Image (cartoon, rainbow, N blue to C red; front, side, top):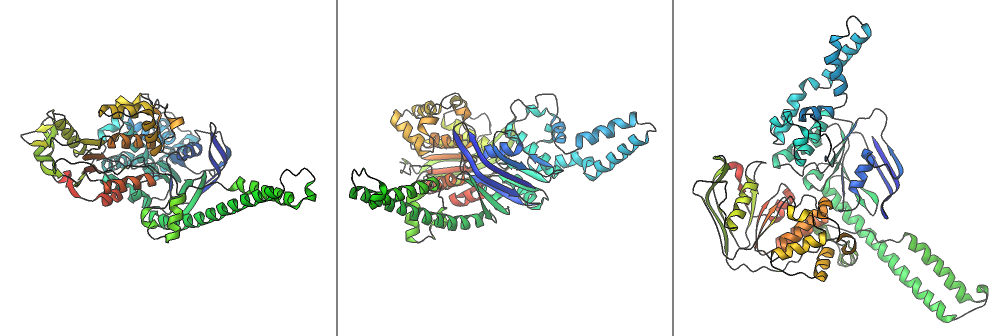
Length: 554
């Protein structure tokens, strides 16, 4: 259904893909993952045809219907088309067939050719299920909790998340031969994600889905990891990937270790040969030490051409199953990950936050009523609810109260109280507007200054390095030009500055790659403060645990 061969793809002076090959078979569901910055977006742009500057070949067989979600919508569809018009325009043959059906009756008369075209169009329109397209759109809108009144709004007026969901819905209705999806679950609640995973399991389309959502990766037939510029294949779902990755990585580390020892041995032999024939000026053939040295130097040069350090990563659970020697080698050679300090925080008070009989809503209409709970040091609480249930509204009300402002969403006489020792920090889905126009360096400096903390240049550059930024190349990049993964890492820097004793997390795993998610989970499990978190990542929720607050039940 799809065959991609990339001999070489560069972006500026950076080589992103080399010797890359990927095949997608009929009806196959493939998860596509890779570290932030590995080249996933570049790969998507190549396959969708928005980037044609590469050495290689992309083969999609004739008559194959290929559809993909768009990454950006800025400047697109700024005309007067409604959402339903945009969605149906994405459906294969819909526009052509609809035009024939609606216009031919007025001018075809007794023209047999036109009558045949019209009759065939009616049949094809029916076979494709397009007579029920509005019902299908309404069904998916309900599943993903989109207000169906948006169907009549201009598509250009929708938010970025809503646009992505509309494009996903169009693909689900169309059932193309090949669907290419980019992080489809980032804006879904738990019910919507369950509906998407069910569709993924049952669809007849071949699907290539870029995702680090482990619930989604649990439903695929194969995982392809973009690593070291190549595609690495793992048959089975996420659990199978972890097992195979641990085995393959352990073997690769052993091979790398053997080659490293061989290189060291060759260099020692070269030094020895040089010592035995210092300053020799005659012909090589007359001195066996010179002959030996030159032979070894040729061998070393040959090894150096192919001996590049791979990206080694094994998940924590699989690492526990390794032998002592394998574990030691892994920690010696493993790929660099974000480095989060796990310094203990000072609580000052065991009781940090109390919510008593709180009802929140808008225009005197409650989103939820009579909510009560308390948060103490080292507590974990998972806030659950569908999109629109009031999760973000609750977080904003807490922030207002902490900042000595009466929440304008508070209904009735409920109480939100906090300890004077509370030091609250949040992880939000969107970067604050005050940072977007700053360079990365200035943004980090601003984050610490906002907490009355001084951070000199050396400290800021060290923080950038700890969070996988390149201090030399990235310090001058504007925050609004960072990738989703880079923005997520900046959010982590902002959240953990100042040693807070209560964290509020809103979908923190969105945009992070798997090693970074695991590092975040490990840090949060060791974190001695309290955590109030919103997530639809079941793996993340199991890792953090704690009490549950289900707003759908209030």
